[in-house]
Image 1 (cartoon, rainbow, N blue to C red):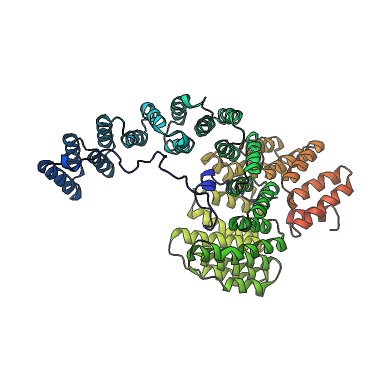
Image 2: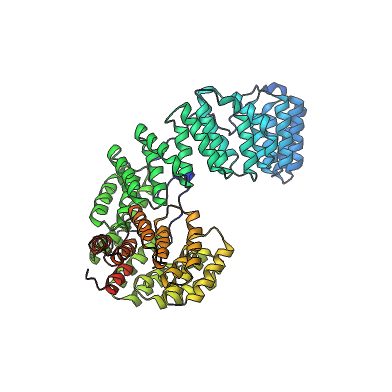
Length: 590
């Protein structure tokens, strides 16, 4: 058995702030007002009469110097004019000229001079704060951050606090940043209105510093002050994405109480990234029930139903999505939505053997950026009808003007050959790709998997161990190597250690739990193997896990239960190779 690569979890920021992979989703409105840490239009007093002729000349010369490639001289002249006139807009211009010239220290000096001249200026303080962060001088930011917090109107503080985490997101010393933010927010923690958001902000910073337990403690304090608040829910989502399941009840309570479609969608995406399909589907269904015009939920639900091979349900969800396309914001988004939908319709028709209908869906799609995807689907239809050579020719004929496009073509061809059950040819094509991109971890991993498929176990081990040495966080490599040992009944203690290492990185991955169970079964620990497999199958009903669970039950004399599990597996995926081989080896008729 070879577990496919699992998709990485979507970043929480992408789920909540950035548009999803397909840009037709409804998105939460941006906070209104100007209470973020970005500098705002200058409201300080500006007296044009203060600019006499000499100062006007100096300003003009400064702008001209900057325009002809001497930003240093231009900025110095502008700063001098600002000091002479005591004009806040000239201070701002001097600061911005230095920033445009990438002269961080000069920009800081200009911003500090501005703040010294106008100590109550919120914009001057913000510029100093942001420049210090950009220069990675985190330890110097505390007084400026405190001033920004103190000058923020009380109703706007929760929104402003969220901006703090974004401001410090790129600093190198995350622990110091977390400490600075904690000190700056200390005065807000007892405020019933701002306290929950302050605690949640501290929690975000602790999580960024690699301290999830401290982040969980912060969220618990926020919830104690105000149960079910939005700031806690956002932090809980981030904790959940990072594997902290203890935070999940906070998310669940929030979405049930607030009925927020955007929060449900973010929650569903995290669940999908963790391969927790049943709870993800429950959230998507809730969105479609409460917000039936939420297009992204219908499309995501359809894709999940395609993944689990529920073709009729997927078709129905896509039809609901299709009906919403005319309501999407602009023609470009609508065109992309129709393209993505047509690709899914074509895939469903292909998997059901309705090849003419699949091709009709593909004919509706314009070329452009989707040309490779369209041709890959056409090729898959040909291959499924036994025309592998013609299918490969279709992919090879797609033009590729960049190295990345050529790489995608080669990967598509390998996948096509793999699905056509030609592992030796797939390995040959994949090896060529690996030679071209020897440092690419995903390509190395796929090459190792195909090497194992054709019995080249030593090469597989070499590739995976090199991958682990290059990237110790690539937990799929530990799992693949450990499972290969277990499947062959060799080096079982090492297999267990490798798979346990993988589980440390992904403790809720049902396929890694399945690998550990199979190792225990090969080691003679039948009861432990059964318990692990039942857990894995409950988390992710899958034909391959069903094959293993059924075999363990069969070996333990529970033939009736084994047949029931295998029947579920066959319903999920009638053509699963591992399940079919298991039934054949044990002499069980499907």
